[in-house]
Image 1: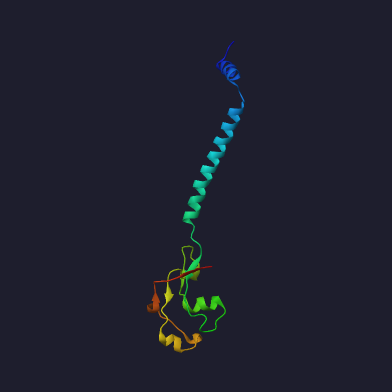
Image 2: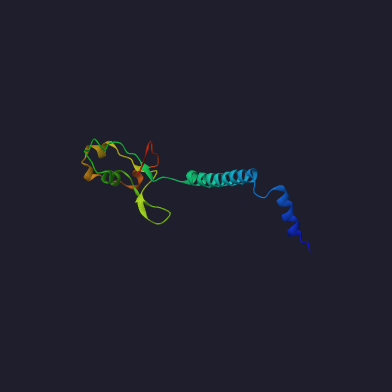
Length: 125
């Protein structure tokens, strides 16, 4: 009794089951598909990734402050992120005026009206 599977196997045996062309084609096709799928996936990850950053506030050298965290604490407002964690603002900084510069940095105090929303430069962590 001849089944459709038997006739298919006979045709494939006559055409050649595993020849040089089939192996090359299979290898190139599978390799190309894997590369294309991984590149499209990784491009989404790279495009949507946002590195940790904050405003760069110049003047740290003038006050002989070597601790970057102290300078961030003095010049960047604190805010909660979308996870509810308290951290430094990413796009805002305190408006440091002449009055602040004339006093020692330990005496600086800012109100919410002293926050400006423009950063000229950014620094990544």
